[in-house]
Length: 207
Image 1 (cartoon, rainbow, N blue to C red):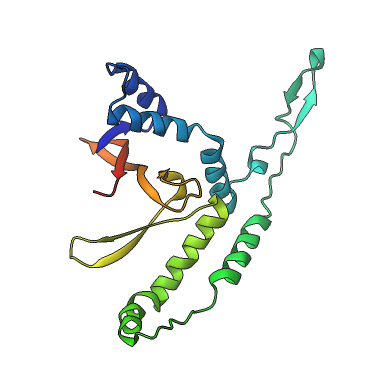
Image 2: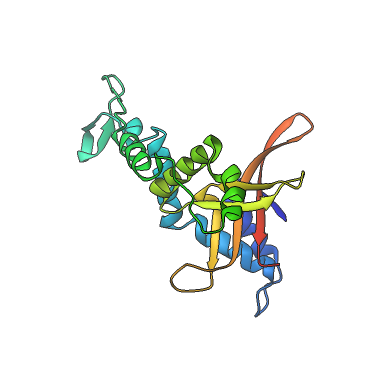
């Protein structure tokens, strides 16, 4: 696991400090993939999609302007600049999510033992809420990610990752089989009494 500050430039500096040879090391490859992903239009679209759902829309940055000297636009600070977010986008996402996963589903199988084993995990209010959150991730960001694993108590759990945290390494052109994945996320840490944002990187592979 690697740690960087929240500034993307630190990732670039990290790569620059390495003794870059003809063949990249695993760490250099990971850092290069992170840089490529966080600068991509796809990554920005994911963040924009979630921001729009939360009401953080372009209207909030609207400014009243006029043509000033030499034909240049100037900001008019002395005039009202009303900003009202009518979040129709959120309403549409909620409506689509409710249409897709709003109703409870049934589990059918010829193997009743298999059905009985699945029901405690999948036919619960907690899982329905989890599924609805995943559907909104897919609608806002184009994809949703679930990490199945065992927690510290040995219990099987499903963890939802934010779509813009995951960099997939697909094995096939159809994007149906994962070869590996990189997760980049931020946590709040403290050095003494000073709050600091730390960027963490996790790499998942078949091993």
